[in-house]
Image 1: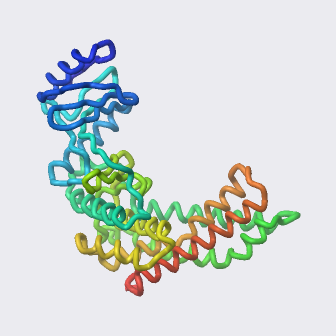
Image 2 (image 1 turned 45 degrees about the vertical axis):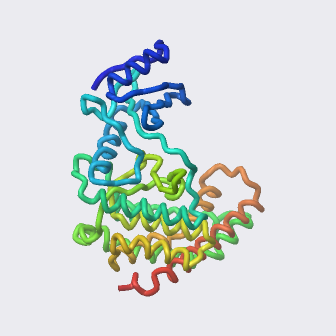
Image 3 (image 1 turned 120 degrees about the vertical axis):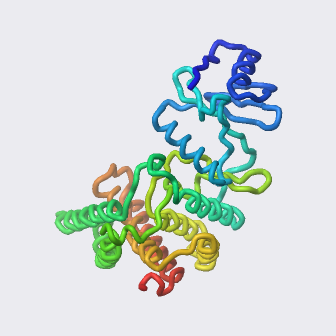
Length: 340
């Protein structure tokens, strides 16, 4: 991998150095944020530099693999004349990719939801045969189950704190009034997830690259209407249904838990990668956990209480409403299939 130093070079010298490294003509090199925008003869490009060498190279190798197997949802990654995916620029790992004009995607928009769903299922399909050496860290159903088990334990602790407070607050009372339902939801989640934590059942779930992170917040709609990922920095390896469950949950939230909107997204995904009943059951198990209430309660009982009591109670009530709406949305979305 070659080393370049462009810091003290004028534009002409930068152009010559990058042309020699990449083998294509460059008309201009302009500073852009912390790096450079490159105007090549055929297209605009972006030169990106990262500090974490090992992590960046691992991401670039995965990017190169997905590009080679035909995934269209990533900006084109250019290789150097030596065949390297990047180079060292002033002690940072740097690479050049195509620059795509457009706008950030919005799941509240029908067209964008369709583009995102297509991006997600194509990523899943094209990544399933990725060699183990290229895969990022793995998450399993057991990891998720252990996290939810810990949260269930914490919720029990919050209940104890609320019950034994000398002068119970309004938040305590609202929390305790809803705890029976919360307990049922948490138990249902763990009941569904527990069998999938066993190795034999884990092998029944298709795995691949999961976009993870802020599903629905990190995609791009180009000027010509195509969808692209902004990057794969948060990608992990695991059961594909976890990604789809996160996406469909976000679709429901942004579309006010509209069943038909969620069903359209689910159907679009299923047409390209058929889902089996075990995957749908797992998705329901993840979705039924009262995530919003846990966040509100954790913030109140263990976090920094910067809110006044009225706002805290309002947040808890809103969180419970959203959790209940999400659970009903998933029940209507999957019908009885998850029970199979």
